[in-house]
Length: 128
Picture 1 (tube, rainbow, N blue to C red):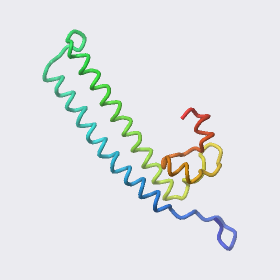
Picture 2: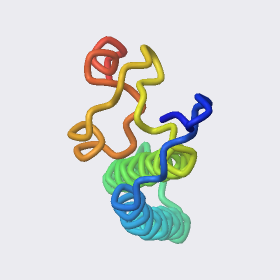
Picture 3: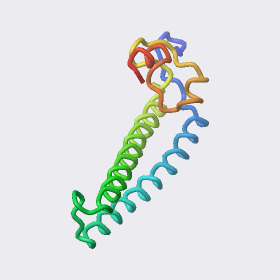
Picture 4: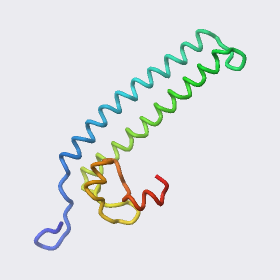
């Protein structure tokens, strides 16, 4: 966008996209909290039982549960960081361009993946 004097202006933030991002942020924050609680419970149960994961038949299950819950929690934390970054890009009006090639991000792309930073060709090339 340009002002009458020819200077560029930032596009206005997209209120619908921001609302979707904030809803996703709330859900993801609740998921992080729940998964953090799950990890803490698993750790506490395994400590109380004083199990030897290598020799106890239940130890492998507990170790798997702990690893799975930790991985899910970490993925949710990463998604939360992606959402926060997307909210900031929307507020700055910098969410409609691919970070790699500068091409416009289609509305359909942002509807499907509001945290997207790359166009589909660049995301495919990056293996994401």
